[in-house]
Amino acid sequence: MELTTKITSKGQVTIPVAVRRKLGVTGGERVVFVFRRPGEVMFRRAGSASVSSRGVLVGRTNGKVATSADIQRCLTEGAARRHHR
Image 1: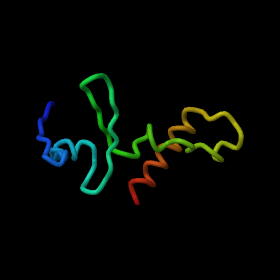
Image 2: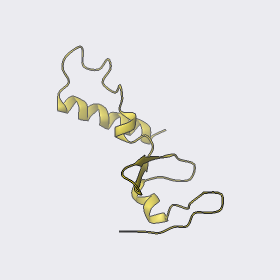
Image 3: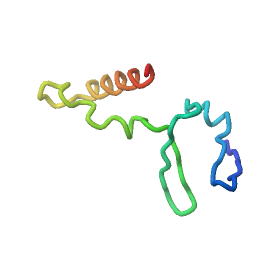
């Protein structure tokens, strides 16, 4: 799917409803812009796993190496906490 929007004279854009729904964002929330290659920018919901999972395992593995199950559990719990804020 490709959608087009217009940049205002103030440099603002309206994110189309379909995109907001797909990302799960509403008014007042933040998004992160990531510069990919020349002429291409990707954006995602702020606080997505790649941004907000830093340190999620600190103090949660009792000094053991974290398994993929440990990591998934911590990410899921963290996402649930963010969702209920």
